[in-house]
Image 1 (cartoon, rainbow, N blue to C red):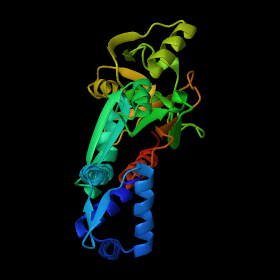
Image 2: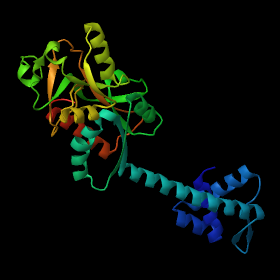
Image 3: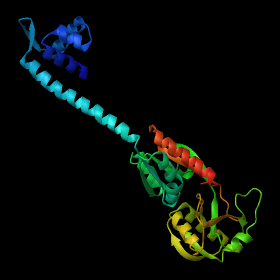
Image 4: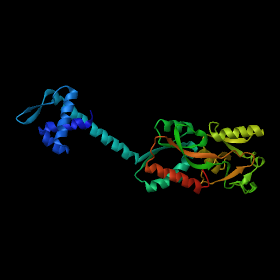
Length: 305
C-alpha cells in the first residue's frame, strides 16, 4: 500500500461517488472501481456502503481515511523537508583543512568565492588531516583539503596542486643573497651550513613537516637554534614575518605575505600532492564545484600550494 492508495480512497469518500472521484483523479471509473475492490479485498473489510446511489464510509473506512489524511500530511511534510535540505545544500557548504592552511583558504579562496556567492554560508573547520577526514566520512564535513599521504579507500580525491618542502625566511633575510638560483628548482637553493646557525622556528612533531625536519636534523647530526615551537604553518609564517627566525614546512601560497621561500639543498623529499577529499556518494553542488575551481586556480596563480 502506498500514499496514492490513501489519496484515492479519501477522494471517493469526499465525493461519495466513484465516477466523480475518478474525474478529479484523472483516471477511468473502471480503473478506480477495480482499485477500490482490490484494497477492500486486501484489507478483508468493506470501506464503503451504498445508500441512495451515494457511497458512505463504514467504521473501517472512517478509520482508514482518518489515518490516510495524516499519512498524506506527513508525506507532504517530508517532501517539503527534503526540498528545503536540497535548497540549503546550495546555500551552505562545510569544508575542512589543516590548521596551517586556514589563512590561505580564507584569503585566497573564500574571499573571491564570496564575491560571487554573497548569500552562501561556509563552515570551515581546521585541525589535523586525519580528524578532518574522519568528519568527511561521518558526513560532518562536505569536503576537506588534505595531502596524498592521507588517502582512504572510502573517499573520492580531486587533485588540487603539489607542495614542496621549503625554508621560509623574511623578505629582508641575508640568506636570500646566499641562495643560488638553479634551472630545475622552483626557488633559489640554500645549503644547510648557511642557515643552520640562524634562529629557527620549529613545527610541532604532530605535523608532517615537523616529523621530517626532526629526522633530517638527526641524520645530519646538527642542532638548530630553536627559538620558537608552534603547531601550525600559519603561526610559522607570522613568526618568520616578525623576524623571529626561519622555518621549514610544506609551502602554502604566500600572496601578500612578507616571506620568501628557499629550496633546501640537502632536504628535498618528493613533492606532496594536495587533494580535496569527499565521500564517494557525495554529489558536489554548484557552490562546491566553484570552491574546487578556486582552489585549483589560486594554487597555480600563487606558484603552488
